[in-house]
Length: 202
Figure 1 (spheres, rainbow, N blue to C red):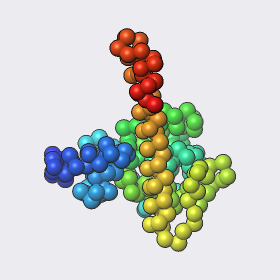
Figure 2: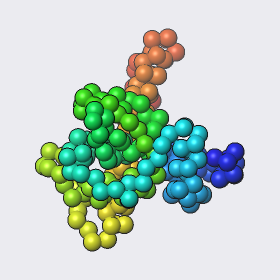
Figure 3: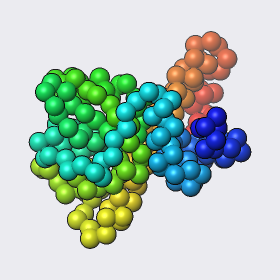
């Protein structure tokens, strides 16, 4: 993005600092901080990754396509299925480098997954629009059901908040696992005793 003239180095450092603090993707943080527009972000990434982009707001996604991806996955990984031609399932993603979820969806749906790039805010609005209305009791978003709001922007903000909470929970879980392994290694290497480790973390 610096090479494309969309971001300055100072702006990038600021966005990275905020990302480390709050979690989430760098692209989403850049847009939230208004360092560049979502359209600029998607355009640059599309060229860099040689990946097609999609405008979800120009589409009306069929319910049978939405039912292929549970709401909890859509919220957690910030993606929206939008078409199912032949043996393919087309997915709009704000993080196209997440190959793990593509493999998971391939196994779940028994379809070939094709990823398309969409902006993080556009993804959030689509999740609020389609999954916020409920497409079956087993697929509703857990813990914080998105209500039917007349103001679409409020629904999008609620979806964004839930996604942020899920991301923070994942970060905490990951950090706890890393700390546990590090402490185990210290004990195994004789750097500290088990009692000393337990005393430090009380």
